[in-house]
Image (cartoon, rainbow, N blue to C red; front, side):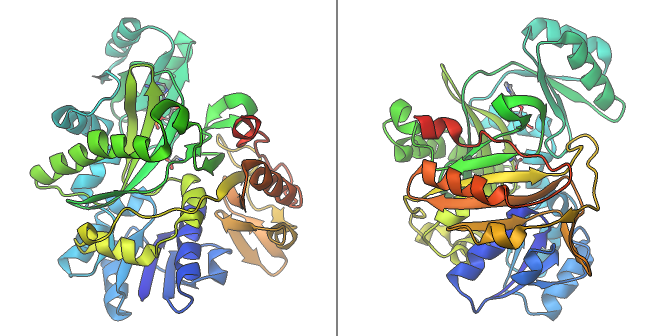
Length: 423
Ligand code: AMP
Ligand code: GLY
């Protein structure tokens, strides 16, 4: 198959590695990609957010399937343009992508579909913010209404910090003040062809920068999959996945279809398991990063077939995707100053040694190759991904490997999957 993957993160590298391991014969193109992706795909000098440019390239190169990694091309209407030309694309159109791009849109759809989520108030000025903060009480949750790469949310007991966060986003739009939801978080992905929904395996993401879930929210500092502790609460992972499919994913996909905005692509449900049931914190319209890095290596079925089936409306003929029992742990290496002001352009050494640790591979994000070797180009530099038969094994391998990488000022959490090992 001839496949074009849009994006440049570790998520896109993970997608490409999954496609490669399933069939070494695929012709894979990536735009813009990164230094790691360059070893596994042909890099294309193309603006992934330009619908005309992407469509022209896909036509010229007889691409069979376009896979959209990040949210920006979705919001820019790249999937719409490809669909008009009859090119199969995994990723929703602009209208359905609002499920991620607009928290207000997502809340309305959930409401209409009867899907459980936190109560929220949309505020456009500081007086409305203050009133909503007082109504819900501490801890306070304030979210930017639009896209903010995972950095638009604050959860704090400090009222002044909540007010300050709101003020920063009110200048350019609205904010949502939300009820605080308490409980463990789970990321669960669904493939959707607009009608049929197929779940993948759940993962846990670590959103905060520092060990012990301290520090600011980030795009994600690590992940593991599967989640053995779901068995205690739900009887098993399958029971949990069935419940969320039935009560959350299917109603939302049906609702969007009935509104004339079918969702074709990846529905990412960010969930909190509260004492009063599973609730949605957010939806994303794309694969999660770093969760994808731990979910896809466990996928048994060919990814290209599943994505093509979703893109072409034939997902119904596929059973639920199967996953290996293997454990997977991803630890993200981030630049100094991330997430506030990442310092970039530093040398990155030791990646070859890291990748030689048993059952370890690297998913590159912000890397570029220069004559002198690899250099960093952004906040989250790469994910070290390790597989094992137990979480202890996978975790030990991931940390053995990341310690071999040299990056001045590099940051990573040391407690990824620690609790699941203890348990
Ligand atoms: P979001 O961008 O909506 O996924 O929010 C980022 C993170 O903030 C989530 O993963 C949660 O850890 C936290 N968060 C968001 N909304 C809530 C909420 N209503 N209650 C508690 N934590 C929340
Ligand atoms: N890991 C969080 C996200 O992809 O949004």
